[in-house]
Amino acid sequence: MGKMPTIAYIVRRARDRFEIRESTNTSAGPRARSLATFHVLTDEVLEHAGDRAEKPFDRKRISELAAKLGVPVVGNAVDAAARSLLVQLASGRSPRPGLSQLLIEMLATSRRGLEPASRDSIVEWIGAGTRLRGEALRDLLDLTDRLPVSRKGELRYPPLKRLRREKR
Image (cartoon, rainbow, N blue to C red):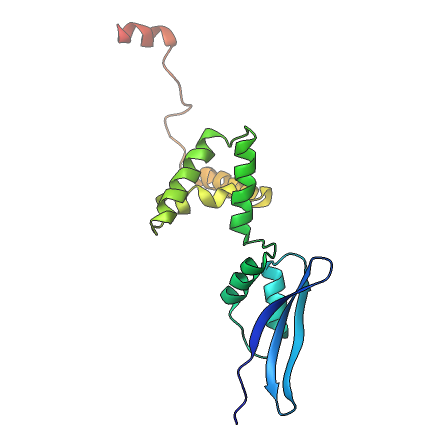
C-alpha cells in the first residue's frame, strides 16, 4: 500500500481560535499535526502553514474551507486598501479629483483585463517616497544645466502694453 497524499484542513478550537492541520497516513495509522494556529486567516498564516507542511497544499481550498467555517479572513493588501477606501468614501471623504479619475481609469481597465495606459507614467510616482522624488529632481536640474545657452543674450519678454495692442 502506497503512502496516502497529505491533506490540509481547518479545525475550530476554543476561544475563537482555528488551526490549519495536515493529515498523513503512516505505517502506524493516520496522523495529524498542526501547521498554524490563528484567529484571523491572513496571507501570512497561509505562508507559515505552507512553510511547515510536508507537502504543498491547496491554499484556495483552505480559504474556501475557512469561509464555510465562518473564519474571519483578511484578503490581500489590495482588498484591504479597497475596504479602507470604501469606508472613507462612505464617511464623506474622497481623494483629490486627479486621483479619483486615475483610480476610476485603473479599475475600469483592470476589470477588462487591460493594461492601463497611464500605469507607466503617473502611477509609479503616487507611491514614490521623497528620496526617489528628490533624486529625480536632481537629475532634472542636472539636465537643465547641460542644455545649450542662447547666444543672443538674456531672454527678454515683450512689454505688456504691446501685447494688448496686438490683440485688438
